[in-house]
Image (cartoon, rainbow, N blue to C red):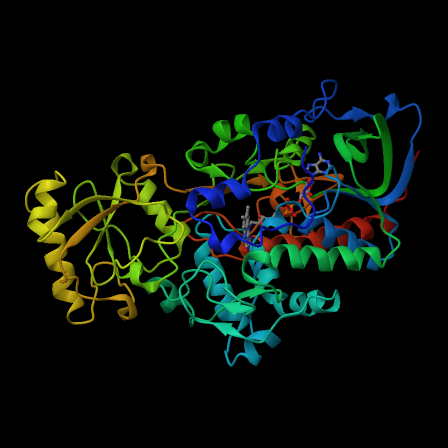
Length: 530
Ligand SMILES: Cc1cc2nc3c(=O)[nH]c(=O)nc-3n(C[C@H](O)[C@H](O)[C@H](O)COP(=O)(O)OP(=O)(O)OC[C@H]3O[C@@H](n4cnc5c(N)ncnc54)[C@H](O)[C@@H]3O)c2cc1C
């Protein structure tokens, strides 16, 4: 199996859609190997401590997984005075966090925002994140996250993370050079801008293009290396060990042996999400199964299953990031998306996961972009789109592509009429991207799901936890000794429709810290028993 230490293909900017997918996905063999956790142990079946003959080792806080959440949980547990051990199945740190673009959604007036000349307030940030999280948003987590965002920024800087005080203002999926600040969601959207003053909150460690995640993980790994935290790679946690309803350790496969490791204070599950577990995805998140799974091969949901085995509730399991990208190049934001009925259905300048959300909701997920020759000068960078039809007039395009008479033409006449006045009364596209499409020939680009273009996906759902990472049962009661963070839990990101880049890594690092700190604190208040 490939290991997943800090890694990002340097040549990514030169790749096109399907190549990007290839670079981010793993072979079937990798997936099988990652899924083959053990023939002997079911992650959903905790082992009774009474059946453990001898503990191989013990520690205060045992962190499972050395990605973004695990690194921060371990650091905070260590700073709280705990003896900490990390068990990581791969041969290096990183996880999906190291594969990521590395954006973190921070705000409220961080030093980076200030250095780039932007004003923000905690209230604006909270209003935005609340709107973005939708009706299922966890108000307590949102509140804690936003009110501690500046503190979290400073903590990251203390760990060695460097933010470059440069703002990137174009429409893109990440900052293309070393800029650390950007708009990364729907902050300028119609409803959002009414709820909160639009402010860039995407914070990326100083890194080239998509290397933000690997630079972040290299920095956090170096911070761990400077502590006595004990790190064990090639160590797959197979099951939790429990005693009288409390979690007291784990069973782990190490060096070809099954070993029991005792956790005096708590176990923190930071095993990532479940996008690589086809069975779980088809059961819990079938919509994501339509896209291409991206992430580390160890996103098998093992942490979620172990938590569920202890009675933990798994929530928001059907939601995740799924996206279709028609930018960079603001030119394509000037295009007009239509469905099979020839009707527009969203503002084309929105964040690409919201775009995918709306595209997938159209009849048979058939969606097309109408462009004219002024904006279609070269193919979109990521999407391997094909040109369905070309016409000298909208009538010709409509007829030749098989749309019902008067549908596409009516949509384009309405769009152009208002665009000429700098308005979009239907979907409130920003005037920056409103342009009359009147330069024939016109073309219809295929962004339909079944056209085979790149719809990358990863999961948002996971264990229900308190702000301090205590894993909750459906009853709302916590499970003693069991903590979780990162995409093993349901955190800030709740839907593709509301997602902004950075809501995952911001969440996993911040709530990783809270879980690690809480697990360490439990050790100070709970007498241990043998
Ligand atoms: C291409 C890509 C780009 C992205 N870009 C961004 C972005 O810019 N901003 C953003 O916010 N989000 C982004 N995301 C999402 C984000 O990267 C993830 O949601 C986040 O990093 C998950 O962090 P984590 O700590 O929960 O998991 P991970 O970082 O994956 O860490 C989990 C670790 O647990 C280990 N593990 C799993 N099971 C076991 C086990 N049983 N025993 C021991 N170890 C185990 C894994 O090997 C892994 O190292 C992106 C995702 C992808 C795929």
